Image (cartoon, rainbow, N blue to C red; front, side, top):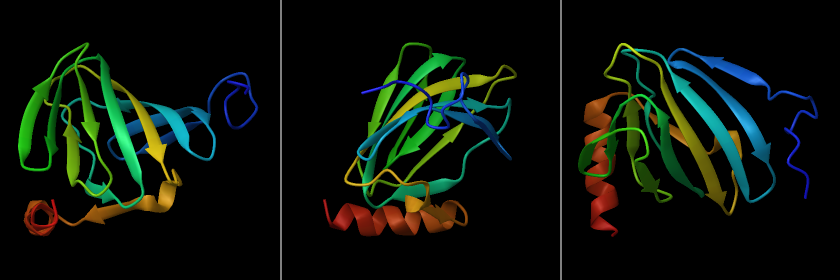
Length: 134
């Protein structure tokens, strides 16, 4: 299997977001590898995924995360597993960029699998429902 970026170019395609950007380094049906760069003092949305699991590895910077009921601070070299269905969130509390290598894997790793949650109150509601099914 080739490790050429999915767009076939010599460099991965960059996708800008309000929180920073990401690059898809490799993708196939069952998994993809992405490099997330979270700008200083920015956060990704509260969300969960129905069909995919995520593995996060902090390559640079510091991260504050919420995964289920757990709140953690991760540093370079730390990792976290996020199973499908678990509500989660990533924030960069520092003034330096946060770089995370993310491996998504599971039944389906399409981009539209993310269920965005409006705010922390919606996040807590989903957590409570998720917790009852664990």
